[in-house]
Length: 570
Image (spheres, rainbow, N blue to C red):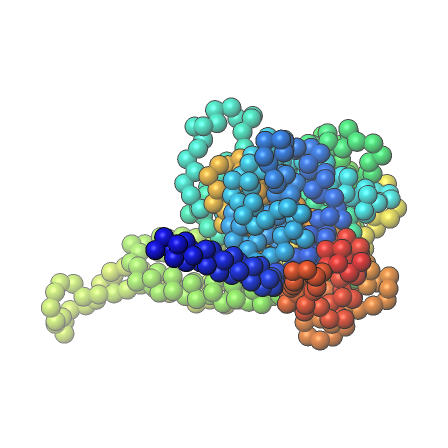
């Protein structure tokens, strides 16, 4: 019996060993997604962001660290530019089924890119200094990849980012100097005054509109103060560098403060505030007052010299035909709305009883002075009534009761004309007086480049970017994450500039969303065209790509060898 049991056990073990051998022989095909993420990884490699960050914010692998801070930030950038519904803090979920080794580096798996790793990286970035890190990276990258000659334009602006949470943390930071930007209630550009927010300050420059400066600010900070303090810090930073070009700083009207601008020692171009008395007079003056000069694309302008309390500057009164058409529709709506409001108020006035004619006259004058676009034609009449109650007798006479005010309205040309004159008009101001190239057309085109930083904010706050509503536990990490978002913008703008430049050099084009050839595609459209690219791993054989056609390969080669290596095209 024992021999039979031993024989059965031996047979079972032999069968199990054979089964294991058969399973080992079974080929398991692994399919991993690449899509456009290889472009993002290649651009990060091209800019050498991982190496530059690790050189400044190092991490010791002697204690078992697998992912460096540079690799962690690379993963966050790829996640941020993935344009999915996975926020950065869900990084492991995002990288499931992706070719992580090709995107991030050999030996790194999706499970390694967890929230603990990213949290430690965000803490390390904050300790190093978010503004300093971005400024140092931007300076090296701009000099190496997009060298500049001559003077540069720097475009500065701010925007708000709402946060989800109470963030009652002010008591944790008694030192007002050494603390992160704090979420607070302030002027919400997202139209969510019920939520606390942070303010992100961004400065871009160059043909690629690369971010060169980032600052996280308190949610209740004011641009009128921020702009000057930020420019002062940028000036101090750039004075420590060698061979830095001269900058002309472009901002919106919050920069315009005569005293602060005079003390700054900077070249600037801004929009003159509309609440200045002289600005109101200039933009509301009649058309025939000026000798206009045609500029570009429906613009015309008049150059005006200005010396305000010793601050010599040039003012350019600009008129935009497109803006006039757009604002004219708005003005007509305001006039109609004002008329309806006045007529409604007049009905209420007609029901009011005045004890004397002077009271009615005074009320009429006060009401008319509040009208922005109309003239009031009014009539004050006596109201007679019978004394006593009940039905009057035939012999009773009516006696004076009160005065009544009745009004009608008509458009007042004297009030409307200045409002029509100002349609499409605004004034640019600059102290760049000795530059022969800074003529009317150059002033306008330079200010219009301010749209580059505004597009940067739209990119960061895009719902697909999934970071406009931030929820992190520590303000320090929010500050660091906003800097990583700025790095995402840097990679995106650098890639878009690269592909457009190559298309221009090679005299090539790709099909746009509507099927027409274009030499200026958006990088997002290129990302969409890369959909469906996968890497297939077959045991015992080299991996191969699927979903790659001639058009996609042509586009990938526009980005250079760094991107091609990720897709193994070189």
